[in-house]
Image 1 (cartoon, protein in one colour):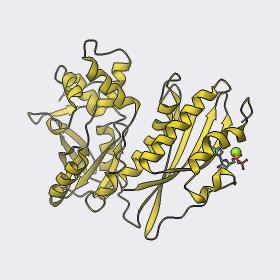
Image 2: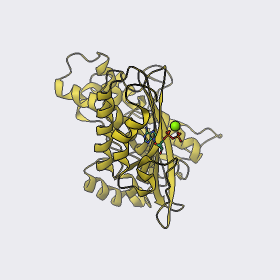
Image 3: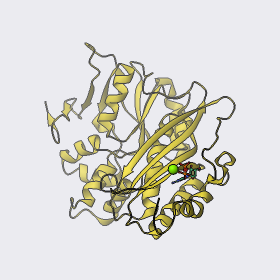
Image 4: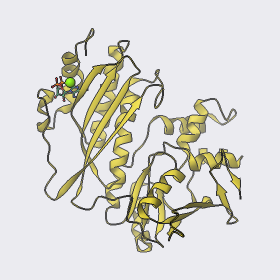
Length: 331
Ligand code: ADP
Ligand code: MG
């Protein structure tokens, strides 16, 4: 990266400190990092990029952007039952970026590294004529062969989701000026859920041995459930009334069914959607208590008819809701 603050200065000042505690990173002073899984473990790897103007606002503070960039990747690892260990960081920065923004960005990463116990081990830094672009590649460890996949669900198993659904999608609407009159604490709760994902990093690995299939909810509950169904070659039935909503989301959903459809089909939840056999219910209830996080059974898996792996969301009266159209309609 050419510019006022040189590429190597930038790395040495802001990023090398984040590699301390991981010997294989060589203080970011080598061409590569070395890493090996612990005995009996395998690595799972995920990369995700976020762009200014698409995944975050160009005016968002650096610390917040850093956390989003890292956490969207940690969410994928958590859904696989993996514990995060290390990550790579590719930074594409326009000429106009201020050093203060980068400093805040590195500080945000440092806070999350400490909280999630993960280390920066390398990356790349370049100028771009386009918007700020940040790609993180995260490495997590799972006991060998036990990675929880999207496939593996069985007909008759229950479908669960962690946390609450729809907050982020509603929060984005709030940011865009919708829901005038919503009380301030509810509005800021929803916006916060959109701006800073809270991946289930510590809970995810505890689903090993309980969940038969899983993925993180980032595209929206209905769309992501469709992915799980396709991979598992099954269908799913969700009871809309059982889907967990936060009090803030509930205050909007109570007013209009359109908001419920948005909550069920919007994105950015970063919760874990998974299937488990009936016998797991007791252990899942104890896990929910231990983590003080709802783990809610919202439906069940069923055999697919005619090779169509469908997702049906039913209302209180058993009528299917239609998400194919904007908003929703009853059949
Ligand atoms: P090369 O010239 O061989 O491509 P670089 O100059 O890109 O190497 O990188 C030098 C070192 O700094 C490498 O260890 C690389 O992993 C690290 N590095 C570069 N940019 C970043 C970044 N944004 N975050 C973390 N490490 C970085
Ligand atoms: Mg390079």
